[in-house]
Image 1 (cartoon, helix red, strand yellow):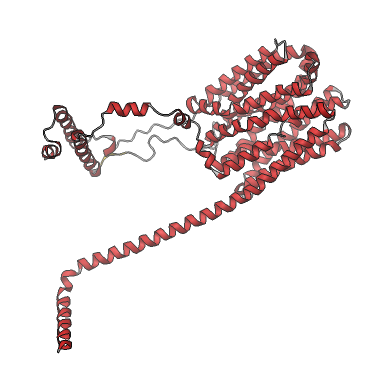
Image 2: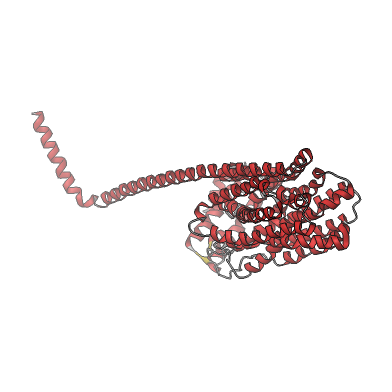
Length: 550
């Protein structure tokens, strides 16, 4: 039977085709007799090979501890080294704008290297990436201790250490999303609390190290401290799919599928237009470079309305986000406050920030806030900007303490929801690519924010213009996000309503078609029984027609 089909299709079968058909027929006989069939003919269990869902606890809390350390260093370290800026500025004879580039380059590299970090996480996992990042941080700070120019500090602290911090930040955020779902806002809030804790510790520690060892000796010690990121990365145990030992069952459909496969392969082998496998492999190997990159970074996110709104608002926000922290301690020293009291302002900010982050995570996880978390995020940004606008009104150390308290509260609210709102928009599956794309876009404004603030200070000789600029930009960003998120929610509700209407129309059409099919089946089944009645009806019609003709 099979030989007749092949002969009819392509004439005389070639020896290679005959051997292939014999092999396929042997597979059919073995599968039907011995119960062994290929994967297409088996009915595997539904959960085989699937990654398990987020455990929402267990080892996940250990992962949160590791993320607490990694995220803490990534966010707090570029701000903590601002303690040394006044002395480094005097040592190298630079301006406020030039010294501000150290923190700017570090922050911009931390954010700008996000796509590279995301690609490495997709390829190797979070654990080795964070460990390698910790090594880079240590190398960068140890090298910075031997710098003889401000340009060398840009390279060692800005680029090398900044890249190491980037390899700590994104993997830590990503792995929390893999371990948590229902408790994700709380887990993110706890992990993000690492930033204020580290800042609260680093600010007085850096001042102590500088008084005893100078800025060069302090950089050596800080390089050794940053190696603790390697320990944090070792806690990021990957979630692996549980092996399933379930015997596949052979079904009748599987056997039919295999026989169909044999016939199709025979037709394909006998067809003169068959493309050799070697050519197919060459076509697969000649993929475009953009397609390979798209495997790791999902550029289709730029068609996502919610993602674009988030991206534009955050790019604008970061133009004034970090500059007030970088210049807070130098501003206090500028108005005559002693060094330890100036450093203690950062500690006050960090303590309030530390309390605000987990509290914000709990509030954001509530049933009243989580469905509209984007509004809460927009309010936090506008509140942050309002604090900066009111900072020039603070006179003396007491006023700066009050400013630091409210600034720490607003800063903690924004940071606690920074990645949670992004995951709420794009989902956990596309979150890795979204983080990478967002950070590379944000790095430009992060890079420019502190130097623009320093330039304003150099130009006007007063810090208040820097605070006003940062506050105005952040209020504008918060207002933009609030309005556009309202528009996005309205559009999503409208699209959902249209989708449900289409589903109902399809159901009604399907029901109508099923009703017609059932009626036709009943008519066909009752045909022999109703045949005499139909003949009688036709006879009556003929009699009536004959009468009418007469």
